[in-house]
Length: 286
Image 1: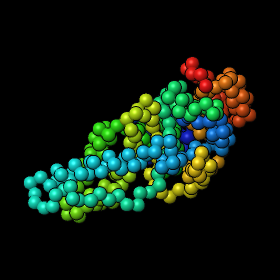
Image 2 (image 1 turned 45 degrees about the horizontal axis):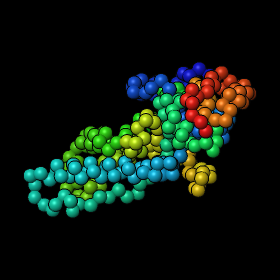
Image 3 (image 1 turned 90 degrees about the horizontal axis):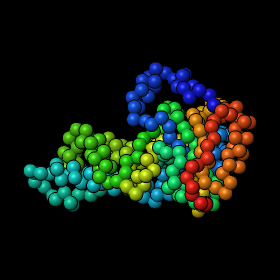
Image 4 (image 1 turned 120 degrees about the vertical axis):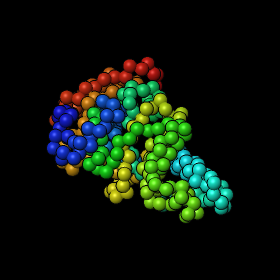
């Protein structure tokens, strides 16, 4: 693979400066997928951001919106203290026109038992290791933000509350407009953060996500189980490689043979011929 800093090398100084602030990023992140997805990623130098309403967790987005509702109602009650007027409980919650949100999911760990189990035994799976900083840069250039997932309602509420409290006179705006959904500013905060929130039972994943920050994407579709899954392509138009640093073969009927086949494929690909391939160390029977 090309040097992991290659993508950064040609960027404007402003983007360099922004990425220097990403001290929160781990050195690498791993994307779990099957062999079909691996071949596509290596061949086309693209990641696919899936519409999160069609991902495995059926609470996606709705969970975050419900957290936002709780926070907004709390802000409303705080704003009504010491005032007269209708009961805050009679105010109505509105979040119309929720846009499609697309995301690529990553985990901190490259060899995670819950991920291998989650994919099941119907196909051979792998995890692809990426340089996290360069993933953030790639996402930025394609209107995606690399963000850490927040697990559980308590942590989600704390994060969202701090963001909304920064909006001047928010409680007064809510009271005046007789609805929790008031300004475009607060709506944008909610929609930006909601895809980061997940049920606490998924905490082991230590997930990060590339999340779309706009709705102006060219959407494609592919069959997946019982749906036509909407997705967007994330990559460069030319032959620029993705910042892949390694591949881990998950448990399978012959993991060593799978490893050799991937290494054989990589030798024919000038972009990734130096990528290291390992086999999962987890004794998981499939």
